[in-house]
Every structure is written in C-alpha cells, then in structure tokens.
Length: 308
Ligand code: NAD
Image (cartoon, rainbow, N blue to C red; front, top):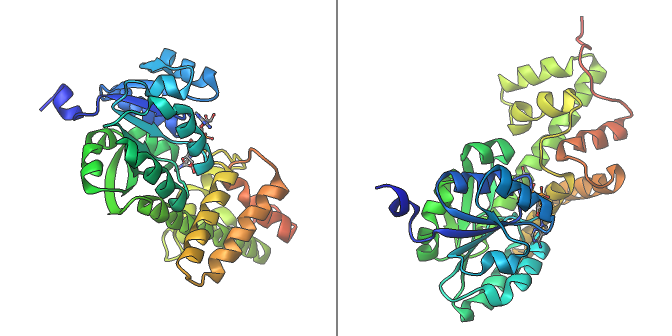
C-alpha cells in the first residue's frame, strides 16, 4: 500500500493550534503526504509554518475547516477548543471528524461531541504524551476516546504522529487517562525535587543523586528526562508550560471529584502547582516548578556539593 491508500479516507486536514506541540505534529502530517491547512490565532505562526514546512495557512478556523475531511485541535485548554468550534461553526459539515488532541476536560469534550453529533460531525479525543521531542519524531503516545469506528477512521492520521495508540474508552476517556498520566508526572517531579533539596542539605551532590536514582528504584520520568536537562542546568525550557501542567493536575482532580474518589495526595499536588503559577508568574516552563520548592526551602539546587 502506498500514497493515498496509506493515508486512508481522511486526506485534507484542518490543523488548529500551531503551538509547541501543534507545529511538529502538523509537520509530521505534511511529511506523510496529508493536505494540511494550518491555523493559529497567532496568524504569523501558521503563515511561518506554511512557508517553512508546507501545506497552506488559513486566516481563521472556519476557512481552515471548510472542505476538510477532519479537523485536528491541539489548543491549551477545553475553553480554547470551545472557542475554535464556535468559530468553525458553519464550516463543520456532515461526515467530518473532529480529532481533539488537547489535554482537555473530559466532561467539556463530551459536551462538544453531543452538540456536534446531530449535525453529522463525529468527534474523538486523542490527547498525547511524549513532549516536543517525541512530537518531532512521530513517537507520541496517543490515548483515544470515542466510538471504535471513528477511532479507526483516524488511524492513518494518528499513526503519522504517534506509535503507541491505545483506545481507552468512550468520548473523554482519552483525556481522563492523559490527566491521570500527568498527575503522576507532576507528583513525581515534585517529590524528586524535594528529595534533591533534602540531599543537598545533607551534603549530597544533586547531579550525582540523579545518576544514583536512575540506577535505582527512585527513578522516574523527571530523574531521567528533566532534572539534569532542565533544572540543574537552570535552562527551564522543556517546552511544556507551567500553567498547562497545573491545568492537567486540576483536570485529574476534577475526575477524582466526579467519580467521588478520595484523592488527598492529588489535591495537595494540585494546590502546589496552582500556587506556583501565581508565585512564579505567567509564561514559565513547567520545569521551573523546581524554583517553587527551592523558595520553600530557601536554597537553590546546584552541582558540586558532594559529601567527602
Ligand atoms: P502552546 O501554548 O505552545 O500552543 C497552543 C497554540 O494554540 C498557540 O500557538 C496559540 O496561539 C493557539 N491558540 C489558542 N487558541 C486558539 C484558537 N482559538 N484557535 C487557534 N489557535 C489557538 O501549547 P502546547 O504546549 O502546544 O500544548 C497544546 C496542548 O497539548 C495543551 O492542552 C497541552 O496541555 C498539551 N500537551 C503539551 C505537551 C508539551 O510538551 N508542550 C505535551 C503533551 C500535551
């Protein structure tokens, strides 16, 4: 199989949200031969995408969606997705598939799907994990919620962007899964930074601690991919915003509330991330969360403090 057959029935893709993740994901679609129409409220981003990567740029979401087989949204929050759906309104035609790839709120996504269904527009949620590096390489994990037939229709599109696709349930289930994944990532980051700060006070070298943890049972995604790269280096530029992580932990807690699941640890974690957004200010990378813990302790993490 090659060319159009491999790309399935969805050929023309309106791609809404050319941000940190949207840019490399849309670039994977262009590379796989899909007809991509890019759109971002920051119009210069979609114009630059079309000029540097390919496809075409649309001035607004309705123009992008008109005539598309599928619309992909990857926007900061469900609120932004609601605004985009409203903006596309009469361009959404029967037979279209809306693939919502943001880390959104499951109940909001269910509401969008219910409103679109009578118009013959199907919707699935397909949030992703793996960050910018795996978006670039097309190796994202994609968590899918929706009807099996709609998930199957999106398969070729999704496989251009990810290589670990899991259909976890009905509409919204992918986003519930994604929020719980990020709850674990957020909690693992926080406890890891706390351990490094305790160790440093004791006289251990944080960089050496990370090496030891990565050979031991304390290893997690933050010890492997964040502490040396973005915290100890003081770069704080992983490409995933602090507000976005705080939002994900809040969504996880909302899922806990809706299911009447006691979640005291998640609640503490949520309050810490939300407080950090206030304390550190807007526009920070999520790895700057370490500075919040450092402020609590009154000490900055550094290297070279190895105990003799
Ligand atoms: P981002 O802020 O870099 O990009 C979002 C883009 O959406 C921006 O370019 C913005 O101008 C645009 N936008 C906002 N409202 C719009 C609208 N109504 N119409 C068109 N464009 C609009 O965010 P990101 O890091 O790319 O994250 C996007 C989503 O993916 C979020 O839900 C986030 O939680 C999730 N996510 C991010 C990462 C990561 O590592 N960055 C990883 C996994 C999941």
